[in-house]
Image (cartoon, rainbow, N blue to C red; front, side, top):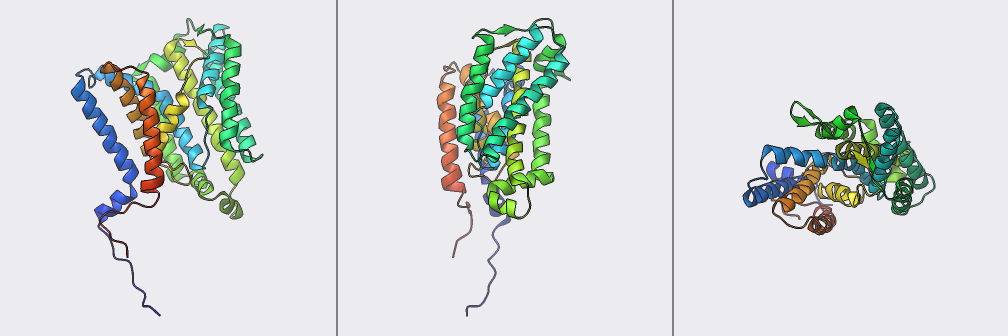
Length: 333
């Protein structure tokens, strides 16, 4: 019988880097992008442009926080862009009809939650893959938005308090950015400090094991899609408030940006592992790239190529480099 021996302790720095490799890598990439665009154009680091970046990134960050929960359960929500568009259009129609803006905001949040609940029911309780359900939702919800608006943009007039949500500032900081920061902080607290956050991670790691130990596994899966729907409603309202109109063409390609931000931030597509800090950094990286490419006079359509490339590289790193447990400064025996 061989004698038992403890594994030698590695360097604390190496252990920290190994455990946080993905977040550190996206942080370095984010800083590199900031440095690159600041060298290419003097406009990039101006206060006005930086505030514009965080204002435009706010809707993506809000939905990305919710998408982090969804992906942590080993799911996916491809319908987020269509949900944003539908809420955006319905809110504009309701406001144009003279409905009070506070009532409209409340109703749209409920609408987003209902959309998420319906999709979550099919996924969690009927066993239909999330990819299929939300792909169908992507088509159905965008179709409803087109049907309601007939393809036209619906202007919103004379609702200054509602416009403040998308255009206003508080202590010089954009209101949409403040809202997104509050949502991100809430996401941190939920994932790190609450029982629900632990259940989300457990269900994503092994749903059957979570069910056997008494966790409400199906309810947890369904609930993350409700959270995603409410987050999409918030994003749709902020976009409507900023642009002063609602359109069925809003948030085209939105799901691509959101998923890119989440996987770039280190949340595992296999479920069971999440990083809210990585999601924030991923969102800001996508926003910085989009803004910087425009400032250096590169076609905005090129941003889609960059975003798609980032998703591919992030998934490759996720599955090939980090999933095996990156170890630095330590030899395996």
